Length: 196
View 1: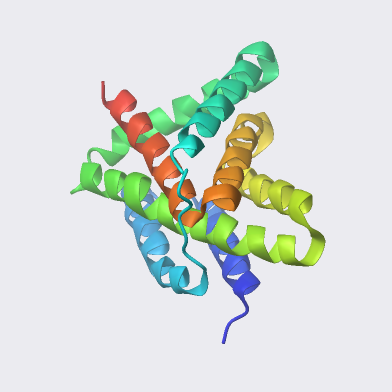
View 2: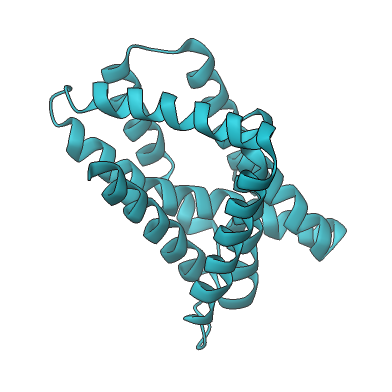
């Protein structure tokens, strides 16, 4: 049996390698979907529970989004880094729309695969393993930091780290389904806003 932390290491290494090779946009899109789909079975390695008061997770998450936005607006270097990230994402999404089934693949990855796989990897496994070994505070920091840095290097990772802390809190307080729902809701809203 594969140790649970090995799933985290393999996933992070695969994403980093995939990013370093910078395949053409359509290959990147389909490869990303395939990579995330390959990690769906890892969900069997975690505990699934949903706390009764999980709707409060949306309030906590909203506050984290506001805090991340405030940090982005208040610190020019972070704002510039986030704007550059948005420009790159817009370019990728524009090209992805030209790929066969591009819109479907983007939606499938953003709304379903990424929230499910990333929450299992970063909260269900990494958070739990760090918490078991070193305690709650290191679990929050480690799982959120790896999540943020995997999404964006540089200062654009700061607001992502803040949001990741809220996802970790939702996971810890209400369970994996709560953090998955929050993550999926944010990605869905981001796709909707981008499509306007």
